[in-house]
Amino acid sequence: QVQLVESGGGLVQAGGSLRLSCAASGRTFSPYAMGWFRQAPGKDREFVAAISRSGLTIRHADSVRGRFTLSRDGAKNTMYLQMNSLKPEDTAIYYCGACVSCVMAPSHSSEYNEWGQGTQVTVSS
Image (cartoon, rainbow, N blue to C red; front, side):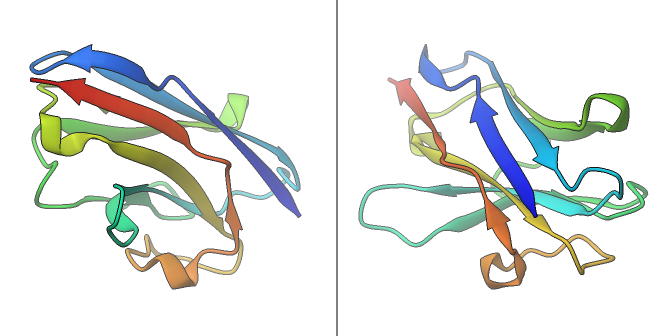
């Protein structure tokens, strides 16, 4: 089993930047597909970005492409989300997820087995 812990959220002004981290522990001897999702109040959990097991495929949602960048450091068992040019509509709780059985980079939250507790990102206008 994998445990995920997000960090790096906070309050930032529009146009600012934040970097989220997702540290994995537990079953970390094998890489797995991972992703970032976000959920705003009253809305469904939304796909943000994902990385395949091999790390060769990285996907970003249209709403964040060009502003957000997912990366992973295998040696540290940590995934990152660099968020630039933040907008008020990016305000949400951001979650990282892991899919132990996936090979590709899934964009549907139902494919993920494990989730972190989430970190709040608030962008003021």
